[in-house]
Amino acid sequence: MEKSRPHIILSGAISIDGKIATKVNDSKLSSKEDIQRLHKLRSNVDAILVGKNTVSRDNPLLTVRYVKGKNPTRIILDSKGTISEKSKILQSSDKVPTIIAVSKKISKTNLEKLQKFPIEIITVGNDSVNLKLLLKKLSKKKIKTILVEGGGTINWEFVKQKLFDEVIVTLSPFLIGGEDAISYLRGAGFSKISNSPNLRLKSVKRLKNHLVLHYEKL
Image (cartoon, rainbow, N blue to C red; front, side):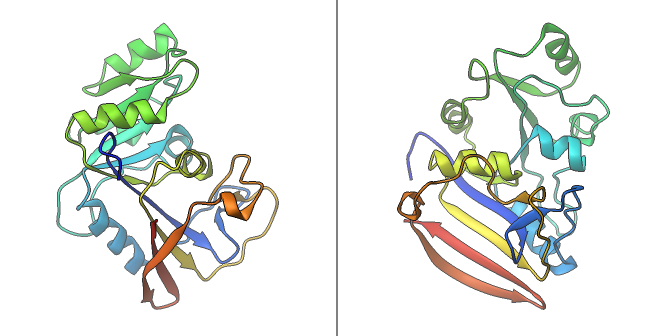
C-alpha cells in the first residue's frame, strides 16, 4: 500500500450479471444479513466515500445503525457542490463528521450553500475532484481506511487509477439485464483483460442465498 494514501476497500452488492441497480435505479440487492455485515464493516473503517449521484439517487445516511459501533467520517465527491440542502447527509452533518470534496468549478452560490453547514469542504482539482490529491489530503487527516460505497462511475475511477487495495462484493441471487441498468463499473472500461488489476480471492462467505466475495489487489 502506498503510504501517501489511505487503505481503500471497494464495497458493493451486485446481481449475478454484474449490475448494481436496474434502469430505474432500484438497487435493493442486499439481504438483512448482508446489511448487518456491511454496517459492521462500516464501524471498522475511518471513512465512507460516495459520489453525488449516490446521494441524489438514494439519499443515504451512511451511518452505522444495525450493529453497535462508531460512525465513520462521510466523504462525498461533488465537483460542483450540487448536493441538496435537504439531503440526509447535510441535515445530519452536525452529528456525523462530513467532508465534501469539490473542484474549482464549484459556483459561488453552491459554495455559500455548503458553508452554511458544519462540514469540511476540500477543494481538489480544476474540473473534477482529483482523487489522488484528495486521498493524500485525507491521509494527512489521519484517515487510514476508507470504504468506497460508490456507484459505477466512482468505482471505475478507483479501479482505473488503481487506487484500491481490497474489493468486497456481495453476489445477490438476481438477474437484471438491460443496457441501461447500472453496472458495478461504468466508464470506458479496459480494452484488454491483461489491463485489469490482479486480484486474489481472500475469502468466500455464504449468507443464505447471497455470497460475499472478498478479494485483495496483488
